[in-house]
Image 1 (cartoon, rainbow, N blue to C red):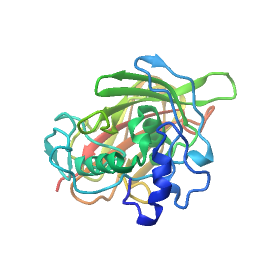
Image 2 (image 1 turned 30 degrees about the vertical axis):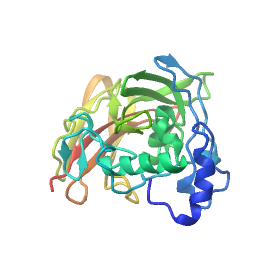
Image 3 (image 1 turned 90 degrees about the vertical axis):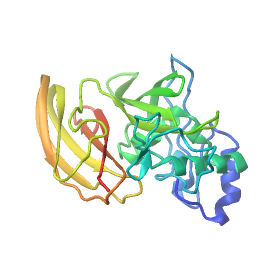
Image 4 (image 1 turned 180 degrees about the vertical axis):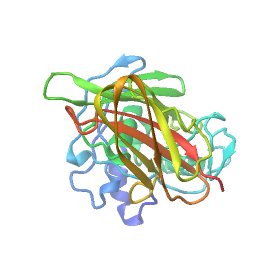
Length: 286
């Protein structure tokens, strides 16, 4: 996450010693606490892990210059590096340099071990970066080598089991067993986000669209970037519904040249504020 002050180092050493542990209940800086622990067994379902106030995670990655052996094998993109030559880093690291800097720091003192847990990273992305605070559980984690799919969800009053809001796609960002997890997108379900295309060059206003199945839906579209105080652009609320019905909207945004932006479409209002969401990554020309 963001560069940490020297005076917080002793506290972070304690936090990093347990990857699945929770953060300090009263951290001096709320960005230094860790997200909730979740099971990360390969191709298995895990029990839900509700978040608590003491589990709040950082909202931006650590930074620093990477060593040559620690950077991801990637093709450079505008302001960042692609993962495996195709996938765009959305969160928590804005590029391979930030991921490698965290990896070096973790090797030195064990800080921010939650980056090694795909479930906790996905929940932190949903809850802290997207701001969907009700979606606070990793319902299922499925790993396939360098990939992980985390079904994130929320608990509704109507039933005992959590409901899945999205399937978050993550990848290892870097080399070695301690390479951190990075969100690269979502696997669309009954709410799809097909326009703009993944990795497309974006300009304002941006045309966003896809298909949705549901009744009396209200779609919100936001454009986000790590480290920003809030959305770079937002459009709300688009009435939609039907069986795989097409939806489209235009959203204006203001962003610095270069880098990757996260476009997120969400809907809800029946049993939770946000019940389904989908994300994609776009680039801003340098």
